[in-house]
Length: 178
Image (cartoon, rainbow, N blue to C red; front, side, top):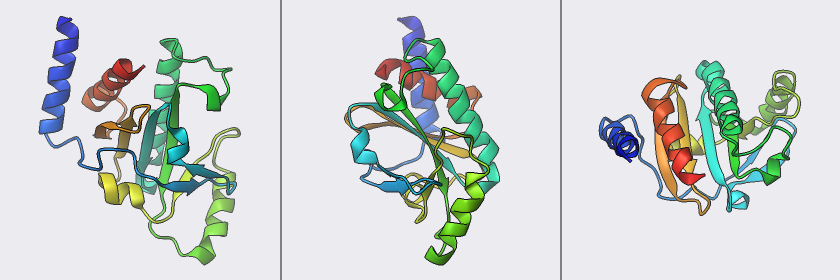
């Protein structure tokens, strides 16, 4: 109980410090497409906890590190298993790339370039219009992480590397939601 109070106090201090971004109270209704042109509607993820890690090209290695470390941590906690199909996991981790209003004629070229860089079996969701940055803040080159519960209510927006205070804040919120 004491640890939980300390974590909650830390989260409040983190939010007050300005590290947590402002944004909508619920996950917005947005549709992204990945490097293979598959579509993802955020509304379709209701019923699962959603973690969106986004940012620009300058910090891509940090965005990837967030996703991999979160996945490993959730599996270690028994939230899901590696062999569980992605659609059945109680937590959905999304990697979203801010594409900076790339013109429509160059988008197929960008997708083709990304196909060779994204690990097989993973999707890099492309935010062509920069909606996540507009709604939750642009912290490039740092990653921004948005955590929403099963109903879409946003519980945390934090920017930084996947360690220290940002990491502790995200994992604490995920522990309360799952």
